[in-house]
Image (cartoon, rainbow, N blue to C red; front, side, top):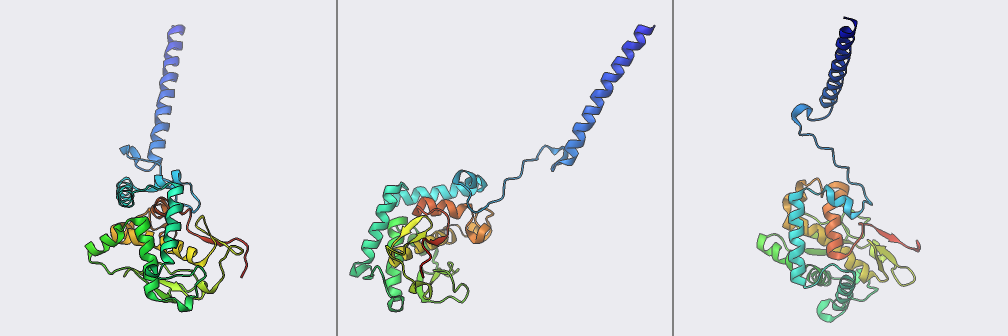
Length: 263
């Protein structure tokens, strides 16, 4: 009789332990988002400036990433080269050489911003677009019957302190003249998004490349420009911008920096 009671008590203890463990598991399920439905997925980390490519690419929704990669393939096919460092460096050299020719605007490396004309700015922007985007952006703008890209000298009241103002919805970019009176030279270079610029013309070409990334998104993916959680962070410099800026123009980040703080 005593042995039988001990066995019964042992079974009760085991069953009690199982019940307690089951209750604890159910309590955990109740506390997590999604409850019992099994639809819970851990939240993705928030985008932060300085993230590595492998980390920020994970934050781009799959359908948007597919579209962006498709656009990159089209650009690479049009320009007949990929995004390797050597090809990108050569393309920037070609842009500067084209810009200094009469048909490219007759630019000087150390130009006087007060003497720059809209036609020169348009020619430089067109050269950057052609060498790096293969004409795809220009084609898309014409196809969509959107306003043509314009680069205008002067000062944009919306952003008078940047080298360029952000792209406007009508495809207009303003050159903020007060910034382009500064000196950029071999002795006073600038790091523009990872590119070492030793002339104002070189810095301006890279700045236009930055704005052309915004123009690509605005004109090719207007829905992404308006609402994508992977484009809007950091004033529209989120993961999608970072990926395109790197893969199209070789830019790292989206900031310019004086190397020696010389006025």
